Structures are given as structure tokens and as C-alpha cells.
Length: 357
Image (cartoon, rainbow, N blue to C red; front, side):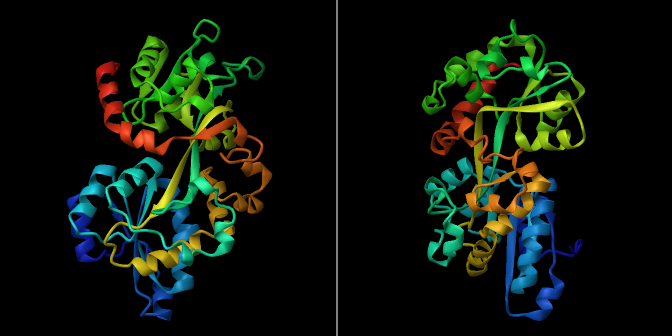
């Protein structure tokens, strides 16, 4: 991966105006092979996740297609929305969450996916509810309960969110992030554990349930801190993405996942309305959708492919830590993207009223 080159002036100005951190991945060898293949700008989420995408998706696509691939990262929903609405769109593909995708699609800010250009071999393994008009499903992560096995023996571990909230039967500290994603679903499941009836739910009741934990709950600013609390034993159990637990397991830390009542959060690649390189964006989607390509970032990220055919290319050792794994998939359910998208302002207000910070 070639790094450190200057990004195009217009893109730099556009993203800098939105305080987006920009990094460029060049594909010099590929461009030399086909100077007429054009460009593609991908906006993703940064960190080790985007590092894996660069290595396994973006760079191989550039090398095979001759398209010059540039990357940017560090956006949020509000900045992305402003960028598209301003008409100064220079990102061609954006990696977005399901609720962000839903909100942008409803606002008319995404291009329709031309599914006729997506190979049948890609479409076969995509669940029907994940085949969206405005986005291609890629990976999913799960919000799970994890616990420290040196503090909570596995034979006495909590099995439900009701157990998580039961401080008498399961004493000790709990941890979660707060403002950016309050555990409203987990609190609701502690009230009624029926996954099938989770949505829609009463946000006020959920925040009351969160508040009932009082000093037993530690709220962190980010998941890295939650993972550290778990690994160090400062928290006996936590609410955390599964991808944060995998590295701890690999490092031999005393942690385990309870997959019961987990929630899956899908991610998608979408094309912003007015993307300047829409044709190359569709070529990229037709490449990355292949099950064997999707499978390549499972091991380095602990995120599970949404395309079920990708599991043919993932080892059982890796699969057991992934959402979508055939052994645990029935223990969870997908989030309701429409409900969460519409509830975003009310969840923020509910957290502010909770005044736990």
C-alpha cells in the first residue's frame, strides 16, 4: 500500500471543510497499466478495520481494474449529509451503518444500486432483507454481552440481559459506552427478553431501566475503554461489539462472549447522490461482493460477512467469533434500522435527560 501522496485539491478542500481525516492509498502499478480506467474515492471508518479493507479489498481492486483508488476516513452522519446536500460530492463509495443508510436513502441522498451489474454468484448468498435498493451489504458486527471469566466463572455466567441487570444474583461492575450508543435495546430486553418483540420499544422505560443500575454501571467514552475494563477485571461484564472481544481472546485474556440475545448491526457500501465516479463505484461493488473477497477481512476484523456463502471461505476457528456463524446466529436478531433511524434524536434527548455523566 502506497501512502503519503497528495490527495486531489478539490477532494482535500471538500473533506477538510468537514474536518474529515484524509488518507490516500495509491495504486501506481495499476494506473500505469490502464491510465484511462479513472478514479474511485472510498470513504470508510478508519482504524484497523479500514487497514484490512485496504489490504484485502481496495488495493486488490485497484490492481485488477487499473482504477486509481483513494481513501478517506473519519466522517460522521451530519458531515456526510452536509457534504451530499451541498452538491460538492467527491466520495464515490461510503461505508455506512444501516441506520445511516436508511436515513440518507429516505432523504434522497443515495444513488440506486444497479443490481443487474452485481453478479448472480454474489446475490445468491445475500439474505432477502439485506438486499437494499440503495446499498450493498458487506459485513455485520454484533452487540454482545461479554464477561471476565476470572471474575465470573463460565458455569455461573449471566445468560440473559435480565441477568446483566440483576445485581443481587450477579454482583459486580458493568460497563458500556453511553452518549454515542446508549444500551437501550439491552435494557428493553432486560424488561422483556423476547427478541421477536423487541421493536418498537418504549425509550422512556429503557432509560429508566438503565438508570436503575446506578453505580453498578460504568459508562465509557469509547469501546476501547470498555474492552480495557473487561480485560483488566474493572468490570465483570460489559456491553460491547464482538469485534472488540476477539483480540482479547487471541491475547489470552480471561474473557468470553455470551451470544444469547445478541443484536447484529449490518454495514453497507453506498454511492452518494452525485458521485462523480458512479460507474467505477459499481465496478467496485461488483468486485467486493464476491463471497471469497468478503471473507478475507473476517479474520483480521472479527466482523462477519452478511453474504452467507462467504462462510465457505472462513475457518471454523474464526467463524466461532463472528456474528452470522451458523452455530450462534439463531441466538440473536438484526436491529430494526428504520426504528433506530427515526429514534436517533429521541435517544440523544433521553441520554441527556438521564444525566448519568
